[in-house]
Image (tube, rainbow, N blue to C red; front, side):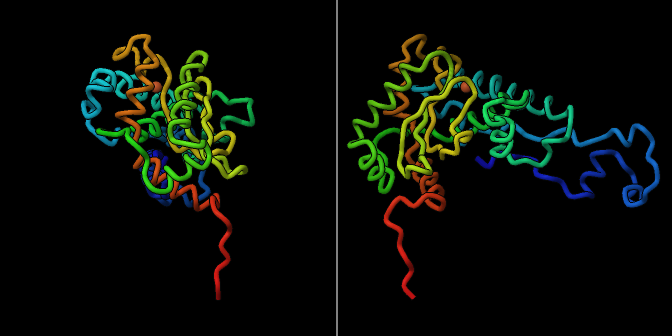
Amino acid sequence: MGSVTCNPLAPSSLLLLTGLKSPKLSHSRRRLPGSLRASKVIAYYGLKTPPYKLDALEPYMSKKTLEIHWGEHHRRYVDGLNKHLEKGDILYGYTLDELVKATYNNGNPLPEFNNAAQVWNHDFFWESMQPAGGDLPKYGVLEQIEKDFGSFTNFKEKFTEAALTLFGSGYVWLVLKREERRLAVVKTSNAINPLVWDDIPIISLDMWEHAYYLDYKNDKAKYVNMFMNHLVSWNAAMSRMARAEAFVNLGEPKIPVA
Ligand SMILES: [Fe+2]
């Protein structure tokens, strides 16, 4: 969320990047030399840093895991996305959320989709955790979980079951469903995320092997348990829910009294 680092540039910045020396050239209709006509902006997205130090989640998620997962895998997705975007500027100026939805292309993904979604997924995953996380959600989030799942324990069981029954690589999410106006647990394969169905993600857990193998080997149950008890950021969930409520009314509609 908010991970786009390069919004559409002002014409003057664009000139600097494309190597045009004088604004006069862009305003005139003069024919440009071939090298200038072919030039375009080549960097779109940057590698966003997790909101804590790489050793801050220890002992539940090691610094080594973060160095590889963030520093190598996440970085590769960013580089891969930018490489794809260099090939044409048709997707220029999209926010990352828009890019994920547009390149999903109603279930017929464009070549940019996997990298775009994986950049979004990792930005979101890092922010779904915090040092000394876990415990119980607070205020509205807890109330909504209890309303939609019966109890917090039921929610935890459902989330864990989804993680352990996910076939292959993917993610488990707590989402707010716009139409049903309720929270739900969903799992997605590979790079897919719930934005493509217009759900609002609240929390995610990366179930790709690179997320847990160094620390937990094949013990996925232990990984999920540690995430739930020590890492999940209910603070992030709370602010995401607050934002989501601008779009989804979770109570009875209130009519302002004049
Ligand atoms: Fe990952």
